[in-house]
Image (cartoon, rainbow, N blue to C red; front, side, top):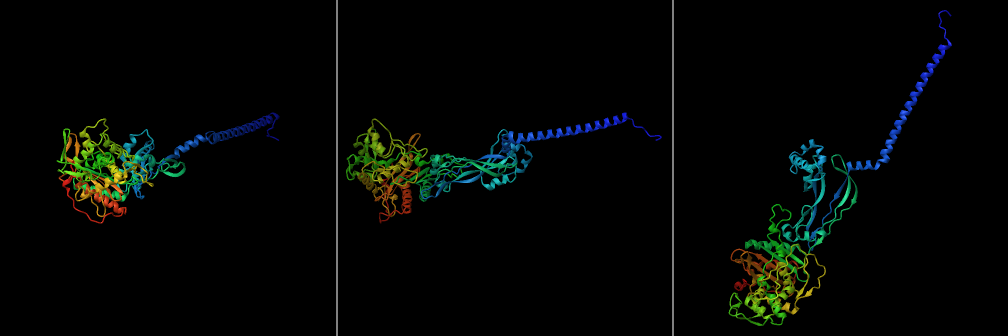
Length: 586
């Protein structure tokens, strides 16, 4: 055909070669893409294996670090209660606010949310966080009521977290403060029973794992790693009803006589239990903001004083045990004074020849001095030691004083005489109460206890029962119209006891115008149930004798105790007026 192009074999081969080249290139590209995507798949699978298998534990830990927390579980401190189960110290849950400075610094723009918050405002928060940048935990506010803490938590400021803790609360306040004591903000015992029984009361905190969100809020409890072990409850020998009664009467007396302070102790003579123990001045353990440290002392077990005439019954007991006298033995106290060495010992008046009972009734210094001088030098100190003077009572109360009973190889006559009427020896109110409880318990000494006693202890015999009973009968005459303690009488009950009025010791020796008024007694005298001691420290004014300032307090306290405990009356006659002219001021 005219004009048609003729295809040669050479052109045909050339076209076939180009087509084959294009096909080969296309196949190569597909193989490359296949290898590429296969490689990518291998990388992804390998990475997945690395993350899910090789690095699984590490990555899981890192995730837990960012979301899981191990937090402490506060342990509940044991309850302190009186013998009837009335709470004296309990722990209530409170909220503590803490912060993680590192976390908070990442969200500084949100600090302004706190504004002028009364718990912690934005300025105070910034100061706290910036000054503790390297820490992971700082306290912001502790022991808050839940509604107080919520005013901060509601702002949702990152880095601020709540923590549940416990705060100690004392329902009876200052009435039991000296005996029960208190804890610090971490609930560690600092004073009194709280400190003495710290090991039993304190529990063991636990640990738990929780999940927190990005704002640090706990959104889930995962597991309890270690459960918290609560502390043991402690049941005291104290009767809260009697404690309130004793506190009220002692407070009234110290105010009435403008005294510097005072103490009162009531013991169950059979069991040795402390039924009441109060002091003035007192303090409120629930509010210690303006606490006067002098008010912290439990004066009944820490403060020493010379017992004065309250020790005379024990001088008589020692002489009776030695077989030297009986209650009716005559003692010549004429002319009302006795010269011993360079010292003159005086009575309030010349009582002449009187029997041993009257020596106690009139509180004759001359009479007991003659009794002491009639015994071997070491006899009276030995008996005083057996009655518990110069040694702790064993109640395991922190800070209890030993007292002071001199140990001498040789005793001068003037020292023996002074010891017989309560000078040269120092004691506490609790030790003196223990000594009178021994007399009331037929001469048997039982250990004193701050804890409730289920079974009365056997104890040990200090003097013969007959001697102890004779002393109690003689002490009944002291609380009569003839004695120095008629104001200690209790309607319906026979009382046995002894007054004491001693000069206070100052830096310059014995003060001429400062005194301690004392009364130690037993009731009911016919079948004793309780022994009690009242100490009025430094009463101001003309009323400072023990029979005037301490004996009435004893009457009010012990009378209430006996009626509260339903102790049957042992006399039917009423109160009688007494003559205080015979009051001792040794």
